[in-house]
Length: 134
Image 1: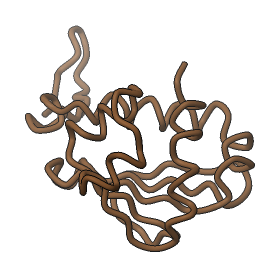
Image 2: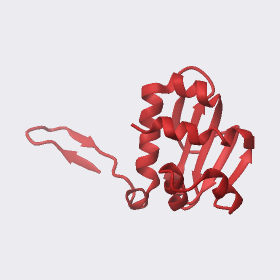
Image 3: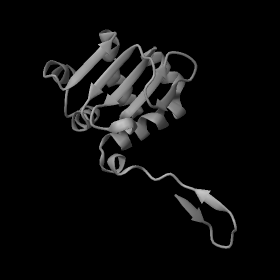
């Protein structure tokens, strides 16, 4: 939407989060991960060494985050890209795993976490999420 600044003739565009993202649990976690990659990307690249695609199955287009932790200082990009491993979960389960209430192996064994690609890399996700916490 556009907002006119008081005393100004200029309009500024602001992007409002979709209602889905506003109600989701993944949105603040994705934001935390993105901030961590910006702040300590090189350190996270040493831990990750791969491209991780996170997909929140009930999160629409906003529920997709690609973490390129292969080289340099890494990057976090919204959307879907080619990845070494793709991790797909529901919003509620992803939030539970990110907060430590759901174990990754339990989630996988119970079908709450689906993997595509190099499964061994998925084991690094827990460490990466832990390092993303402020």
